[in-house]
Amino acid sequence: MDAARLVAEGERVMRGTPRPDQVIAEAWQAYELAEALWRLLGHTPDVPVTGAGPPRAARLTRAGDPAGTLGALRQLLGDIGVALVDATCSAEDASGYWLCIEALDVVDEAKDLVDKLARELARGEPEEGGDRGGD
Image 1 (cartoon, rainbow, N blue to C red):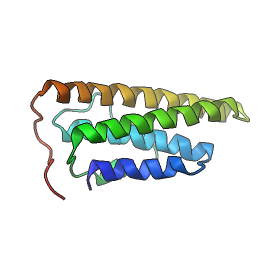
Image 2: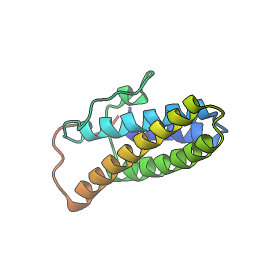
Image 3: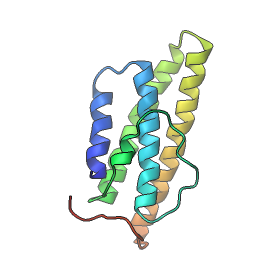
Image 4: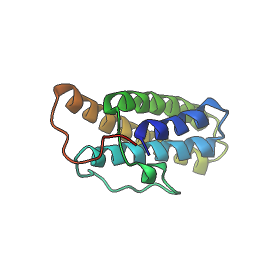
């Protein structure tokens, strides 16, 4: 499945009124998608995928528009980050608070990875491997 469609799935969740646990899950989904894009575009992962639950990224097969997808993923990560700050501030217990903080860290890591990929694409560095063709 194309990366843009996978990002759109996360956008749909965030457009609703997600519960804090859903926002945390979306943080992990977006992180795993950023890593999957990293691998698809010819890199080895810096860190292993460690999120819980079935990753949306497992369905990634192509990135038809890498630059556009990275921009959309960056925006999604920003939206998730804002929602996580709200969830952190309203956490009812220490466990919920720390889950939100951990998810915020994951969002920051994913943003860094997306930014690095976007810079490489902007410089025109060759992308090794990965099917970026039609689907």
